[in-house]
Image (cartoon, one colour):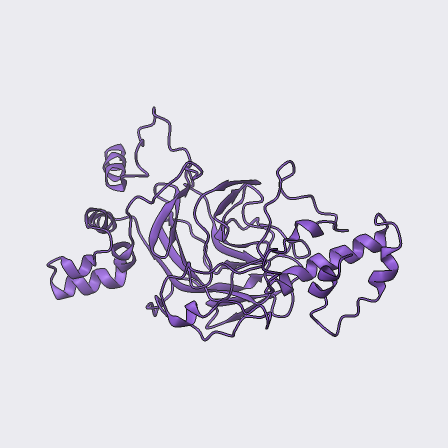
Length: 382
């Protein structure tokens, strides 16, 4: 055991590591040795706000031994190394408060930041986090819109779901990362009522997407579903706003980052009854619902969607269109979220995953990309 590792895990003076020397003389296959390693790894997410030396970064791949009886995540795939250093430079705004989140290696801690309220314009919310459907390691505030995970230390994965089942129509919500984003995983997504939010409370994992009942976007940019993961987007960090659009009419799930489209993450979700969900393994992490709206799939919605796609990227749709004041106010209150999103095609690379669309023989071909055309087809069917 090197002195560097001992120093790294002895930040808390209340912890006494004198048994380490004694157990190091024993076989490393003993249960006591594996239990100690397991304790170190459980403590890693709680103490991940620490930088290593200038030439070395600590990862948790060295501390994988555990006495947990859960299955290994993604067997056969070499696990990526969770970052002990929070993601920076991905904030929605350019507030000085967000730019000051750089770590001081000497202090080995992050400066406590005041809350940034950029992008938080909504006053009414279709749903908030559900007080009765959450892990024990969560704490709600801000009228149940802000969830804090692992208030003291982390020993596993905590999760929470929204208070409303998303069944019919168009649903859109935005979640803002209000704390440093780091650790094994912090995720945003959806899941059915069959998802067990406490199943991995003693295991560090990517909870959303481990089964067929949930879909999750990780802060690392990986998209998870049914135990599989694919590269989907760039990373997101503190200050990032992650938008989620569930279109139950076309059965699509689309993610946005800082109000710009990332891409369609899932298709064929018609008749799925799901809830908004989020999870985190990081100690003292938090997320906040800053928008949650819904609307029926009406001609008014389809017109607003089409207008937004026709306008240049970044243009204020309600500002540039010559609309009467009353109509402008009505659209802003009911469908302002549709007109504010940037639906321009995201920049993709060879690693970006695009879910397969409907088969070429289907009458609904192209529906996901053109809601207006799909609406006309379905009207003909009826």
